[in-house]
Image (cartoon, rainbow over the protein chains, first blue to last red):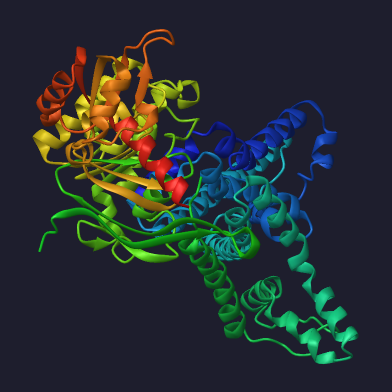
Length: 291
Length: 316
């Protein structure tokens, strides 16, 4: 798997547009933004107000993951990653390169290596983005002569790390489910644009599945049908977040009448992850490579 | 136990599409390729050559039948394909990577030794192009890179679909010589699909001809062409010669050519072995026919191929 990952990394890292524009856009974008913030802070006192430096806390760097997890902003935030995944999977058809690599290794390993590459890129890009945001705010507040709390005691750092890992994990998992379907679409359509379009649609539809469940319950005059929303990834990811941070279930009243346990939500999310990746593996196992 | 065969194809069929759009690309073909040979796989466009190659490489699933490489079913024991190098249709690569990087990626995927890359690039004449992106390569250069990629894992079996497409005559000669050396010196097996029948005739030990998804001929090149010798005789008078020869040999009207419309001399072509020449000469001389020339010509693989595919088309 290490050599397969190395092969994927070589491909993506040497494709300027692919990694440069779709993945490194996050830290590079943050760097560009904080360069403006720092320069503006030097020359204008209004910048302190405009950029919200008064009251900035370094522990807020974990908010960078909201780019991927908070609807509706995440629809735009996930777009580069969806395009990356679509290129990663459908690019092999468009370049006619599957035929070079599928006889040399198992199809499952080839697909899993792509998911691993995606995961490493996303984690690296957002970790780098977090560092840039933290340092950027620190430099700007320092120039403005403002404090940049809280003091980095062991307890604060420990709590921050826990919160950071939770947010990163949940954002990553929710993105992984969506990109798995984008990968599935890329394999079916064998087109990069097909993967992007379908991934984009799923990004919009999935958080709004409760509307579909509500519509079904009205259509069939069965109030229980709305409870189907309990199986949606976004609901369960929200529920896990609520349990870990506030030690209680997510309250979706009046849409959902029941509260879902942490264990159930973890199981449902795990099923979505395993199921969506398994779907991609199954499709590729059975697919004829004709290009 | 090690199999004597590099490839064994049994009752292999492949149908593309569904319902009204069904296309049967292969119709239950059987084929054995022994180790240590260059095997030529011939057929007109759309005959099923590339489909067969894709099935051998487990790129597509058969509708029926099986393919074994070195005695192992490629669908059940996919790992056996690590010992196979291939070019399928035109060699295609990641256009944004250099030639060397493309080979590195393929080497990593196949767990092959990357140290062989410079040597392979040198052997296909690309050592001074390693740092150029493949997008700037000509068709011939891509084909050379394809050959290097096929040889990366030092495979025991090479499957090459039109390997000399896009190459100049010197490049084609180099590839032919290289393939022959791989078989003769290193006992590798080459499964070669090509439209260039003269090339196949020069380099292959055995051939199979596929037509509309069926194998219509197979065997050693020498065996297939044996018994297809032509004797071409220039005679005067033509009519007498024709009457005499018709008593013992079959002559079709197409094989009788008058030299000019006003002259009585002409050419008669007999499909027979060279061993018959003395009897033919005796027969003609006894009948008072003058013989100006008698030449023996072996049928080329190209002529054999065209005859076989035409016959198969007429039988359909």
